[in-house]
Each structure stands twice: as structure tokens, then as C-alpha cells.
Picture 1 (spheres, helix red, strand yellow):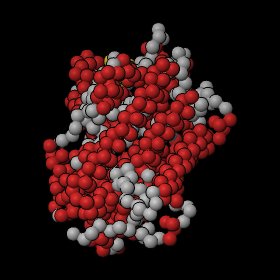
Picture 2: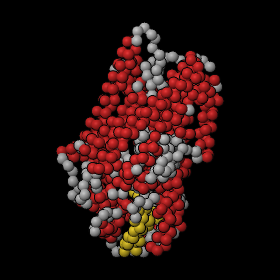
Picture 3: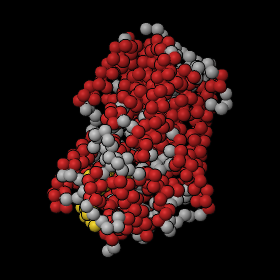
Picture 4: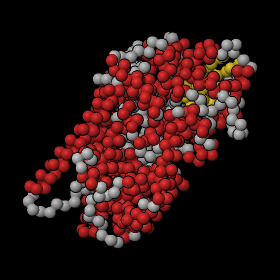
Length: 386
Length: 251
């Protein structure tokens, strides 16, 4: 196995940063601006981008650590990262509970008497909070961090295998995905149901990202740049776009032949439908083909805001979740006009960039203060950072 | 999509100037393109020819309004009014089976007896909110929908699914989108029209047709919303009934 490359690919930070912005826009409940995000124009959404790139950077950072300092030390660092994410999740949960307790006390509308019943769980906080700490109760839009905690907790043995026999590791991951579909595996949730992001399914994208980081991408590069693959990817994206349009204009649905509908529906997000994986891969192929790694614009000021967010992704992600709560609060308390939606969306992204820049500056200052000691590669969200 | 964006852009500017009010039913027609049928309703077509249309509405809490005038102003009654107005000479009868806090599975259990007693040409099935609140396994939810649709079909009844209400205040608490999407897939696979109440109400909220955020004990907005839903449902049912059934032999 060739040593893990040490050159950091700025495209990863750029697209992870953009994915973080899109997730923020999608997570503000009822945000009109979320109509610009990619989930409305095809099958996959920013979650796929995010999971894939996080797998990629996790392998990039911890793969090197495992080669340099061995399995035990690298595993300890991965698990420490998982613990940090758990703490972040619990912190966000506290804010969430405060928000809904407020809604429960201040909102009344005869149109929504049924929906207000959801607040009943506030009557038994003992059970609710305990189930939340077990990651079984997960409020709406707070499903990504628990998925990450699990993916990271399980990553050390996977990384060990990836470093020794990458193809076997990828096949093992794909087998787990297939078995999940075959047997319907998922983890239980509370009060009922299962995890919104099935970890047995989503691990595939994470491992695929890690596999690409450890040399897989180089092996594939001849395929990715072939005109046939690019042509297929473009055709698939157009197909997905056309299908997505029929969801918003029912009259177009008659143009979808019956056999196509029977073949593609339902497009399952929980279990990471194959159509979603293909849509993500098509997007990735187009991106890799048209954005070269040494593209000068990647170092220009125009892309810096997204790149800096992508480099501090755990902080930016958590801030994004908090800002989406705050944005929803502004809609309910101040104004819910379109103008307000645009302001809240733009201000949220500006705050994410400002905080990421501040963290970047602080880490640099801290590093310089330590004297001439060489900087160690510190992981970001699931690996990352400068 | 583009149409929606354009609409938003065009209609948002005047809306910014002041609170918009839906005084005329025509206001709620901005969402009419979302209430177009994608599949025909052959049993309703036949019922219209025989001048006698029986409709059964099965639903949960969001199909009713509180207060003494609730039943009169909720959308099933408004639907009956709109159908009667538009279908001159047809005897329209809307019966309801509405109880709060019921999942799709709960409703399926009583569906056979409901169908047997009312013998409707059309079943309007409103569901999804309670399932989302209890986060019922989405697979079980889809299976319950399939079961209900098959029971109705076997009883010679067309089906239109109605998904959850758009509820912006509680959107951070109920994962309605998952269940609304499941309903879309089931409707497409089973080839029954979906009345996309969620998207329609969301468009109204985005355009300022109705202020769905307002915290109020008053019923005026709720009544106007139900009136509009009843009218748009009537439009969808009539348009679907007048659609030519496809000639390739599908349902």
C-alpha cells in the first residue's frame, strides 16, 4: 500500500464547505431559500456530499496517523473525535429542548390542534432526555451527528483493513449494504421506528470516500475522465432532474412511463437508495472532470469562505444547526416574509464564515505560540482542518 | 419549479409592503397548479354519469375544526359545497370518518366497514401527520397505505391521498417531509392522485396568502384555509374524473 498522500486537496474543503451551507439552508424549517439547494433538482442532496467527503478526510488524516503511530494510537484519536461529536450533539439537544419548550408555551392555533400534540413528550423529560443520550430519540434534523458518532466508532477496524486490503474493505462495506437491504437491518429509535439515516446503509458512502482517499481515486482517474463516463453522468443528471420536476408539476407525471415509475420509486433516503448513490457519483464525476485539483481559482478569495468552513466542519456544522434553530425563531417571532428568509439565510452563512475564520486564526496563533514544534495534522469534523 | 420561483418573485414584492389577506377565494388559486390530477378516477367518472356521487373522507385531526361550526366549515363540508356548485344535477354526498390522533394503520382497520356502509365512488384519505409524530417506521407506513388503497380498490372505490398540513411552527419537531414523500411514492406506484396539501399550504405561506405562523385562538384563518382546501380538492376530483383513461390498459 502506497503511503497516504500528504497534499491536501482544496476541492474537498470547498465542496464540504458548500455542503455545510446547503445543509444549513435545508435545516431552517420552512426556509423559502432552500429551493435553491440541490435536493430539489435530483435524487441526492448535500448529506451524500458531506458523508463522502468526511470519509475521505477521515482516511486522509487518521490513515497517516495509523501508518506513523500505529493502530492503538490512531484508534484512540478516532474515538476521541467521536466523543467530541457526542458532546456537541448533547449541547445542541439542550438548545433544541429550550426552543420547543418555548413554542409549547407560546403557540396556539385551532388549525394545528393535531400537530401541537407532538409537544406531549415534554411532559416526560426524564424518559425523553435519557433516550436522547442513548441516541435513540433524535429531534428532526439532528440525525447527522449520531450517524457520524457511529461511523467513527466503527472506523478504526475498517481503516486498518483499508490500509492493508482496500479492495476487500470496500467489498465488505458493499456486502454490509446489500445485507442491510436484504434483511432490513436498522437501529431502533424512540418512541418508535428506526434511525432516519440507517448507519448500515450510509457507511457505504463513508467507506467509499475513505477508499478514494487511500489511492482508489487515482486508480479510477482514467475511468472518471473518459468521455463515455462523463456522458453517462450528464445523461443521468438530466434524467434525475426531469423526474424531480414531475414531483412539483403533477401534470408532467403522465410523461413518466409506467415501467420507469415502477423501477425507481420509492427513492429511499433512510436506506441510501442506489439511485441516490448514482446521482451523487454522477455529480462527483462531473465535478472531478471540470474542476482540476490545481485549479488556480481554488486559492482565490472568491472560494475562501466556503473552503474555510469546510476546513472546520464540526464547528461549522454545529453552528449551522444552532443558527437554523435561531433562524426558525426569527421567522416565528419577527417576520416570515420572503425578504426575511433571504436575510436569515445570508446572515447565517456570513456568521458561519466569520466563526470558521476566527477558529482558523486562533489555531494558527496557538500553533505559532508553541514555538518551532512542527504542526501536527489535527482532524476536523471527521478529519479535516488545515 | 421555475414557475414557483417566478411566482414567488412576482408576488413577494407587493407582499413585502404589508400583510397580505386572502379575502377572495381566488387568492388561494395561486396553488391551483399543485392540485392538478396525474391519474384518472374511473369510478367517479361513472358516478357522474349516473348523477350520484358518494364521497368518503377518512382522516385525523387536521381534517376537522373545533367549535360548534367546526363540521360545517372544515374542508369535507366545503368540498361537498364546491362539488355541488360545480356539478349541476349530480347528487353529491360526502360522509366522513374523522378522529384525531390516528395513524394510517388505525384507519385501515376500520376502512372495510366504512366502505361497506357508505359504498363511495371515491375515498379521500388524509393521513401521515400522526405517523410522523410517532415516527412510525416509514416502511410500515407505506405498507399501511398500500393495504388501504387495495381494500378500497377491491370495494370498487377510487382513492385520492391527502398528505399532512404544512405547519411552520412545529416544523422543527415533526419530520413531515419523510412521510409526505412516502405518500408521494405510494401514490405514484399505485397510480392514485395525491392532493399535496403540504406543498399547497407551503406555497400559500411563502406567498403570504395565509399567515400560518400566527398564534391565535381565532378561527378565521383556519376556516379560510379549509374552504380553499375544499375548493381545490373539488377541482382535482372533477378534473381527474373528466380525464380520458389511458388507452394502454393500465388502471
